Image (cartoon, rainbow, N blue to C red):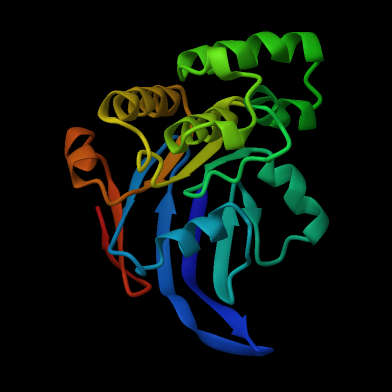
Length: 223
């Protein structure tokens, strides 16, 4: 599902390569795996997720996602691959001009799902995250926790092969966080590969699983 081999990443700086953010990463996540992604702020967790959801390519090394070698794949092959990946962003990234319903429906529409069919699926998902009464609301009318729930619903609505979440419980109360983890663990049980970046040690303790730990761009634990 995911294979890193001696991967390094740096970002450009004024047309020149900046310092490496990630260094010599090598690990494998099998299909259907569940991984916590741990480490202090600045360790490189978000950059690692960006590599996995194809926002950037490695500066060096080999990276394979969903059976595709990313370092050599043509750019035109990436959009279809991205549609198999669901992402819960830390800053939500909702489309401000779309309602909660239309934000959640967007992945299904991009995939060509018939409108009549997707309306039932989106309505059910919004009920599950407790936002059925706010389906017509724009993001600016929602609280941070409500926007987070819309972002989660959008990420999982298409039942992606790979689901990535960057601090998904940061704006949720304890009840909603537990509901989210119930959803993610059930998706994982049904075969979705799940990677969750978090600082929530209590959550990790309640849901013990294999963890990748970063520190200053290095992989310091894989177990």
